[in-house]
Amino acid sequence: MEDAEECSTPGGGSVRMSRDRSPAMGGTHSSSAESDVNQDVPSTIGDPMRFSFLGPFEITVDDGRPFTLRSPKVRQVLTLLLVQPNDVVPVETLMKELWGENPPRSSLTTLQTYIYHARKAFAREGASAHRELLVTSPPGYRMDVQGHEVDGIEFEELVNRGRVEFREGEDERASRHLRKALGMCRGRILANIETGEVLAAHVAYLEELRLRATELAIEAEIRLGRHRELIPELRTLVKEHPLNEWFHAQLISILGVSGRRGEALKAYQDLRGILDDELGLEPSDELQRLQYEVLNSKGTPGSQPLPVFSAVE
Image (cartoon, rainbow, N blue to C red; front, top):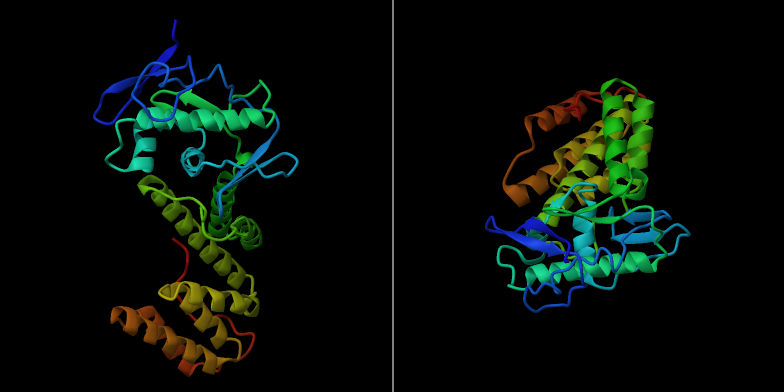
């Protein structure tokens, strides 16, 4: 007898997720085509795998070899499961990611085919029988992973730890953990994955978290007196984020107390020109006050940074 589970579908109905045969690509929702193949192709794993998406999506096995999934859609499905590790991602959400609001009639069969191929690929990599990795869990699927196996999990844990330490005034520890988190980022998040609406939201969240970690790390290091060491990084950041007034403010402030008032005032004028050209705006009141402080300060090297709005929430 067929072993089946019910999963929700768009519109509030349900489908029976069969586990008895491998699905064929396309076609109609026949019982053989709708199978999850949990028994034919076990998705268990014993040796560690590393899933990385803070940059191009990559999978490596325990000996450092890259693990390649040829199908872009299979990679897209796995990525969505991995950015919500150990949580059940409903079939409806996976379909929305792959096909938007108008999935084809064969979408369920096709999705199950992608799951089948992912499991088959895991099994091919010498997966042992003691842990199931890609789990069917109505109304969808989940990836059963541990924190050290997914860079995104480690990244969030480090940022959260650094945030708490920053608030408690433990600036050295905060800097260390935040810099370790930022060091895990390898460029644009999911650079090699075509993202749908759902994944795009997760990418936006991670990019904002990276910016927040950067702000906190910089402010912790300012409080530690590492002013001049931050100038090269801040010059890069204002180029990469020309509309981010916080980065501009830190650069102007640090230049102002490093005996480089002329450069500080030029940095302010550069920002003023960018805001006017792009948005027709003047710098914020805080930045205008900062410019006034630079103009009226002695700019003695080794002074404390000029007043500027903080990264503290």
